[in-house]
Image (cartoon, rainbow, N blue to C red; front, side, top):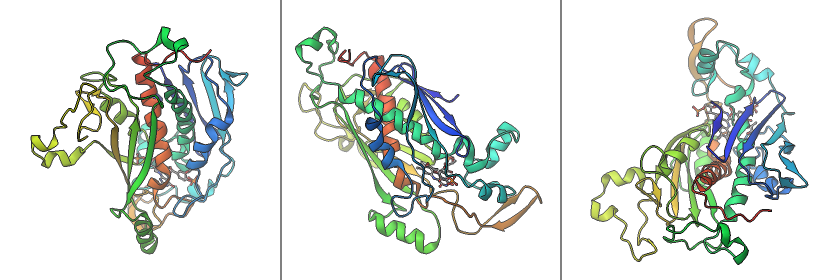
Length: 358
Ligand SMILES: Cc1cc2nc3c(=O)[nH]c(=O)nc-3n(C[C@H](O)[C@H](O)[C@H](O)COP(=O)(O)O)c2cc1C
Ligand SMILES: C=C(O[C@@H]1CC(C(=O)O)=C[C@@H](OP(=O)(O)O)[C@H]1O)C(=O)O
């Protein structure tokens, strides 16, 4: 339902204009140091109103720890974090209620939940809920940073299992970085955004994510391939409409001899990385690379023609409110968090974390 993961498991809750949004995280190893300051940098990156083209709705996004943290360390019990919603303007949504927004979840929410849904600000569908994802992601990132293939002597008793030596070059932990690489097809992001501003419309974008330091051997050949696990998580991010790994869709236009990544040595290092770090559903120890297509914001300022479900007619209307002109701008930190959560779960499934937290 609203949960993801098997060992490092998250459960997301809240509504954009309700009292709060947040996340429950199960499976965080006891003893992992956790402080508000660990979460704040990523929560700041996610906030609206800090760069041109993002929503002017500003919230404190201060994480309240409600359970699972004691003396600044994870207790091993579920961690509950919540964020208050204080800067809501629900009137905008009441006024526009007769038009279920095309591209947003108003219509499907109504069909599925029979009018009981909290529609204000998109309710439970809103990107407001990604605050919880980013908080859980910051904790997952911290766990991943501790991964080292070359543990210090006191960690050796629970060191990574033998048989997983392929390309285990990471002594710097697993690091994740995502960035916007295009807006509306323009590599010059400023230009892409300006085009939308000039057209008084919203615009889509491309986000690329790179993970370094992953060991080989994560994932399973079929249903639990790393691509499946990551894509499952990535499609939970509102407005994500496509995911490709490595060369992705462009691979369909290549010869095998071009696409194959020559293996250079017994570490498994490859000369090229068309595979994007995953072969047979399993990480091969090379850099993990994937890209996401992010659709243009549904709530565009441009006039639209769609159903007024009170009159039963298609009519012109325009959405007034505080919206992101380009969702992709705030997406990278969410993508990193989503990747960190999915990968922390895979690492725990493979028992790849040395026991470093007391
Ligand atoms: C960071 C971020 C910010 C978003 N901001 C808005 C917004 O201001 N207005 C809007 O209509 N949609 C916004 N969205 C997208 C909607 O939440 C999303 O399109 C909607 O829930 C329907 O889900 P779907 O696009 O995945 O089908 C945002 C998404 C993200 C990731
Ligand atoms: C509040 C956030 O983003 C919101 C995401 C969003 C949507 O439809 O997804 C719609 C807007 O909501 P509102 O109309 O209440 O301002 C954005 O501001 C946030 O990210 O914290």
